[in-house]
Length: 125
Image (tube, rainbow, N blue to C red; front, side, top):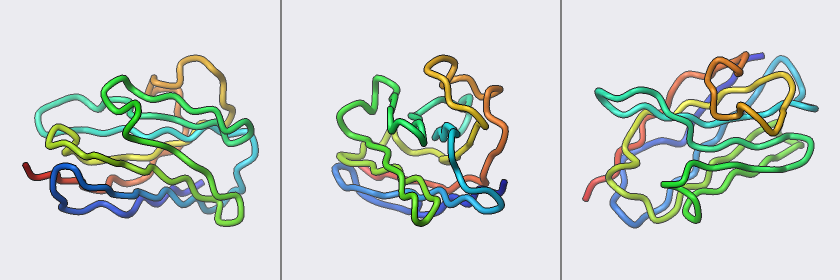
């Protein structure tokens, strides 16, 4: 499975950006797809995930109510919609997939089998 993340860029605080994670080499069925981010000088952290089968999502507290995750079965793509962006959302964003989604350990990077390259999101104040 190859994952391709796209959609990053430079934007202002309060605006919105949409990141896409397109999968090739395999059609998602029972996978979980997660989004992580890494700011300069900080460790990579969980942002949110979605169950491809059930559509269940989880988010870190700091983005709840601002970020959503959706799936597009026709395109085999997962979208991270980021609204009301803040400067502290600035980071490189990564998408990742694990073969079987479970309602546990979704925030643990080692649980993910495939990773895409990152896409930079910069939010100016």
